[in-house]
Amino acid sequence: MWDCADDTLAGLAAMKALHAAHPDVTDIICNGDLVAIGAYLGIAQMGLSHGKDISVIGFDNIQNAAVATPPLSTMAVSPYQMGRKLARVVLGLIKDPQLPTAVSLVPAELVVRDTTGAPVSRV
Image 1 (cartoon, rainbow, N blue to C red):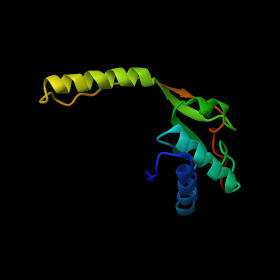
Image 2 (tube, rainbow, N blue to C red):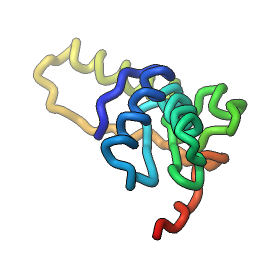
Image 3 (cartoon, rainbow, N blue to C red):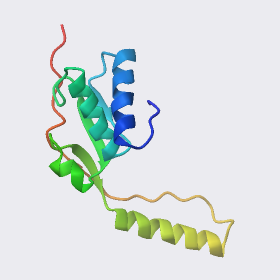
Image 4 (cartoon, rainbow, N blue to C red):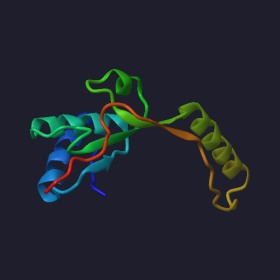
């Protein structure tokens, strides 16, 4: 876990700091696509290759993930479905604040694009 704000510049800075502290890391999963895009920009600025030296996966599947250079691998989730489930939980808690905690599953799909791959062998 590496603390990072939820934006592209923060992802870039966090990737550089993470790599400086842990140069052996070959894969990262970011809490959002904007952070992931910043992370792979940081990888490129360090002279490394995204998808080879370090794989990057985002989370959201925002439109920019598909058109970024390179296109970003990401976990695609349905914000509509997540919002509906959350609304049901909130409405239930309004009716009965003592409702027990519940777990809800929301389907997600790994969308593989150009920022992931097998790590290069490091000898």
